[in-house]
Image (cartoon, rainbow, N blue to C red; front, side):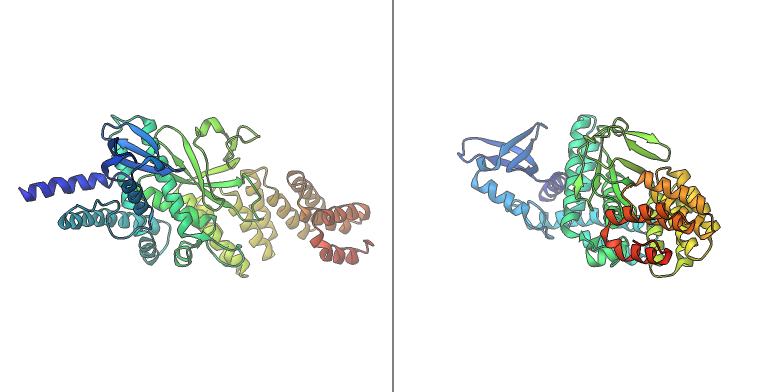
Length: 456
């Protein structure tokens, strides 16, 4: 009889893993009222409980008994290898069975993590390191939460399943945010590379997005990477893209998760918020009531891998290895032929080798894919100038300035080309405008003035 009871209790414990807490008795601070319920979450000094009937209730934490408040404090502590939320009266053999069950679930998660990491062309050692990093992150609980919610979808509304998904998204976001710090500027460390992210616990946007993407898919979230062409705040550095994640929920809504910018958007229906514009998606309302990135591209896993190769190519460009950079950019383009930034950056590498015609071909493709790509127009202007095609260069600089009127470097490019053509007044106006936009460029502008005897 004892073994039968143990089997039943183990099954109950496995089901308990699928919620944030146990189904337990909760009592108020007067001792007069109690309820049998599972813990869903604690937020803003309130506790959300789910009755065994499925009804969800919310209570102020201050109204709970001292025992219940102490129980919440133990759950808030950093995870350990001990079962979470375990009532003190559970027998040791049951605890051992529970720990074994958790280990089985995590082993399956570890195998899925390894498969995802290998598909992104990282070595197995990187997968092993990521598994070790997340071993105490409660991934098995999140996975079972989602599985149980969706398995009961016949009796649960889409909104109820989406609520579990929302809690899981937030939990994963907050754990990554707490465990992996923002990386320094791009010139100092390659924190897009998953091996370095896991080793140093620091990340740039691509590093964060890979971690969220891999773990999110592993635990059962419907997540994909997105390429951000226009940030909700600030600007991308020249030649550098921005990557975040998009998660689809069971209620037909999505959320954008951007750990580098430290936000999770509120839920919205994607095609009600965005309209397709060529190869990208543009926010419909310019005042951006959703407060999300207003211009994005959707990436499949090949597209995410292309971003990794583009980042490797940028490292080789900065290290003075343009040939290797071209090889990496070519791999990125093969994986994602719609990546305008990869074409633009490969053009820069060609230009640095004096291969100006190849560079112009790449810039043309970048502009075809993204007609609002100011950097590609500017870079094509440089290539035309290098070929002595000054009028075409000025035309490209004009377009770059139209698209990005505060880009001082574009004014310098047009000013130098005008000076080369003997258009002194036009050259002076452009160089003075560049200086007004960025006074740090004064030494460069002075050298240009001296070279062409402009008298600035």
